[in-house]
Length: 206
Length: 347
Image (cartoon, rainbow over all chains, first blue to last red; front, side, top):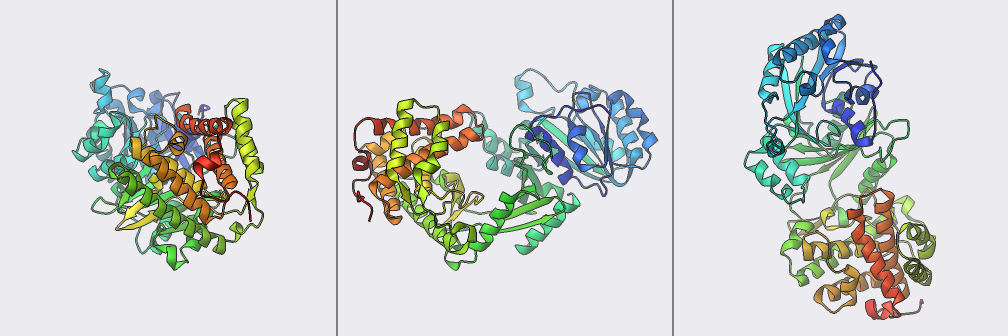
C-alpha cells in the first residue's frame, strides 16, 4: 500500500461513505484505484486495515479469499478507460475476496453529466450506470444501490440516491444561486437529474 | 447504513415517533464537509463539520433533517440539550424545531422533523415593505421571548456579568481591514456604549433560518443559541439580511444597509423602527443601541474572516461596518439619526 496524500476536511469527508454503506464488519478494506486517489487513505480510520491495489494488480485479489469487508473500485475510468472486461474481472475478483456481509463500491464519471457535453467530451470512453449495476449483479451481488456524487472525484459533498425525489429535494435544499444553477431544481423535477451530477457510485451487497 | 449510525438515528427517530428507513433511496447525504471521526492530527480548515442527512418518506417527501457529528463534538451535543430545555416551555414550543439528539459508537445525531411551510427568505420576494417590517417585528419579538426562556431555564446562560461592548468588540474590530480612522471611530462608539445586560441571542437569525408554517413563525439552527449575548445582535442581523432579500433576493445591496438606515425611504424608516423597538425591549440607551449596532457589524464580519470565508462573502458585511464607521466619523450624531426616540442617559 502506498502512502496517500490527504488534504482538507472536505477531502477527508469522502471516508464518510462508510456511514452510508453497511459492511457487517470493518476489519479490512481493499481499494483498487490509481495512485493519486485518496479513497484508501480516507477510509483508513474506519477499518483495521486498508490496502490500495493498483488497477493492474486487481487480478490478484482472490488471494484474500473471504477476508475483506469492503472492496472499492475508485475512478473506474482512470483504472481501465473504456475496458469493460477489466471491470468484470475486478468485480469478480472483489466478489471472491469479500466475506459474507461485505460490500463492493464502484465510483465512476457520470457519462450523462450536462457539463461534460458542454465541454465537448462525450461519453464514448465512459461506462454507464446500468452497465456497472449489471456487472455487480452478474458477479452475484444480491442487493444493489446506486448514487450520484457531487463534486467528483474528490470532496463528495453530496451523495444522492438515484431516485427522482431524492434529486428534486437535494436541489431544493442545496440551491445554487448561479445563473445556470437556478434551473437545477426544474431540471430535477422534469426527470433530468442524470444531467446534473458529475459522478456516480454503485454499491453491491453480499 | 453503518450499524452505529443506524442505532443513533433509529433511537432519535423513535423519540420522534418514527422508524429508521430501510430503503437506501430515502437517505440523501448532504453537506458532507468533514470526516467522522475527526482526525487526531491537525488539518487545514474546520474538521468538525461532519455531514447531514435528508431523510425522505416512502413517497419521496422530506421527513427529517439530520446533523451527524463526531461523538466528541460538544457544540452539537449542546444544541440538542438547548432545544430539549427550550421545548419544556409550552409558550415557545410551537416555534421550535421538533428534534431529538442521540449518540452511538463514535457518532452523534440531531434529527429534526422537516418543517413544512415557506422559508422567510422565499416569502420576502413577494412582500411589500410594510409586510416586511411587520414580519421582522413579529419574528424579533418571538426570538426575544425565546431568549428570555433560555435565560431562565438554561444554566450556562444565566451569567450576571454585563456585556462590555468595547471589551468584547476590540478583538473582532482589530481583524477588520478598515482604515485606522474607521477603526478609531468604531472603537469610540463601542467605548461610549459602556455595558448592557447580557441577553442570549439565536446567533444566526437570517431569513433562511425562519419558516412560516400555517401562520406560525418557526426557527431553525440553534447551534449558536446563547453563544452570542450582545443585545440587539439578532435584530440587527435579521433586519440587515432580510433587507437584502427584500431588495435583491439575497444577492447583495447596491447601497449599504447602513445608508438606508440613515435615509428617509421606507426601508430605512422600517429598519430604524425595528431596531428602536428591540433596543427599547432591552432598555438600551441611544449610546448603547449605536454601540450594539457597531458591535454587530464588526463581529458579523469578523466571524466570516475567522472562518476563512471567501472575500465575496465578507465584502458586504465589511462595507456595512465601514459605512457605519464613516457615519460616526462624519461629525453627525448617529444617536439622533438612528435612535432619536431612545433616552440618552442610563437610569
